Image (tube, rainbow, N blue to C red; front, side, top):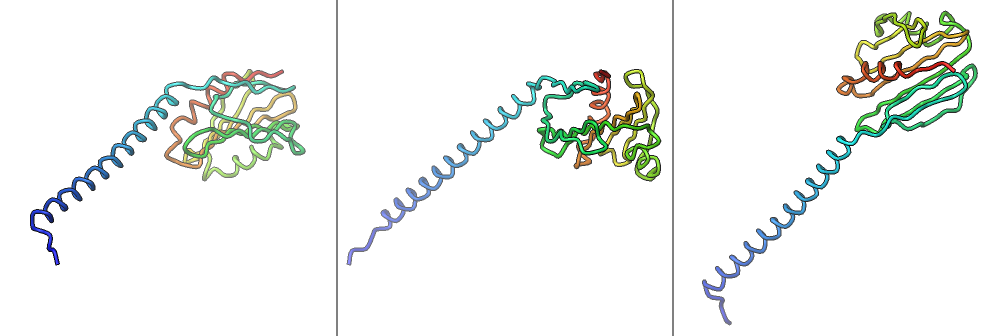
Length: 183
């Protein structure tokens, strides 16, 4: 029986170590390339904001951020107009708009927030020439504006599921309201 020399074992062990080291290096380099490509793609996406879009119907128009896309727009009675838009973000973010006939004292959105002072705070403001009420949820995951106009009530809400993603909601609502025009 031929026995491998000690020199042969050392050479085999060195080759095995070099092979494993090369394989690990290759896998690491491949992973870092993917991370670099992903980081580049993410930073490109973040630095190139999408153009605002316009939402228009027979009653009003407004501009909204290009990161949103319409999910639903089929009104259910008593709604005259109903839109739900979702944002392309890493967390759930939604914009909803509903226009109903009636006045603010019959608006379920208004009445609900008015009695739930434990979870909503309110302010009065003027939007597109009309007195409106701004409601902010205490955990800051929702900002809602309710605007009466010509025997109709428009409710606009911006909400997120993740309370860590609430910083931009007031500014986003301000930007939306600045573009609101009654038809």
